[in-house]
Length: 545
Image (cartoon, rainbow, N blue to C red):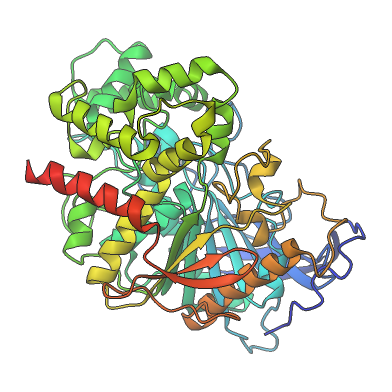
């Protein structure tokens, strides 16, 4: 493995990423022209192939359909610029967006394949936004550690997750896109020096939840051998939808549909609406949901065809998921941005106090306003805030509450089910490091809430172009943390064990180890024990009733 010891020795020098040589690779569909690039900080050379189609454009009759293998081309196709991002609600992107990027430190020479481990990145964005752009997910650090990195786009929002039972619409197409990209990797990655038998799928937020879904899908078998799930779970309230057909019908009616409540007629109508109009109005599918079109169970779909054949909790509890080595974790202050935003106005706290039932988990199935729902809301408020009202003086507690309900408890639940039923090791972590290149600071966070927020680990794995790193040096805590994260994640991709510097033991039902990633690496037990025990009690009480 190449050492990262000299990583960022030239951190204080700005060097523009430059291309110095074109290279070609022949894949199943034809020949691609990529380019040699030089790392901004490491000065190391690697090869980039961008905007590579891994599926046919999902246009016209292929809208709302499972992805199909890409068409072949004649001649040499330039792979020098990134493909369009998938259509999003802010009018960015295109419906023709199923592209991936490949970055490799070494191409095969004279028929010899170096067989490097492969890491396939799935971006976050609430299943409605984001892309594989190198401006956020710069490949330099991971590729320098001798892995092949693949970053992918996938369909988002209503274009990726419309579900209409009884119609010709295929559900979970955004997730199926990810599987299609993984199939492309299996077929072609050896031509870039990668080993198709050593593929790690990894993602963050909605990308992390996607990893969880890929693990639960029987259609994923053989597509990857390891998984890393950062701050995402199918058990997060924003990552799973119920009543998908009703959401589709509500959106169609808002857009002018006046026909019968026929799933096929609704599907036909929505295929005639522009991609921009669909994306811009998708919240009308369920106005009280920030992310109204996300993954869902596929009812009545034949075995071997359904991406998600049953409810996530049932699949996990019965061990019906891929038993592969997995790294999974979350940040120590996931909701720091949300908590900081709430503190800008006293009126926000009045709204929170008046609507504590909003924190009652939707998967408990309790009607809002019911006696049981109000009782649980009161228990939640007392646990996090005692006898106080939620206010500017309880911002850290509010951060804990939102972190737990939105992210942490779902990730924890995933870990519990995995260690109970998987035959493969599960490595649990908490990212706590609060450094100058934490991603949330790029989005306007301040240091009023300590700890690591949602997405804060990203710039310790990827070269996030928005951060000016020239004032950092090799011994800074940020560079030390970057070195640790890159080594742990790539060690896992290479060996199935992320251990680096400190022994990282797998979590088990008997000993729930987790690694706290801060200025030091510390192996601990029983993650956020009091808070997680509280939520266990809430669910046990609800199930008993």
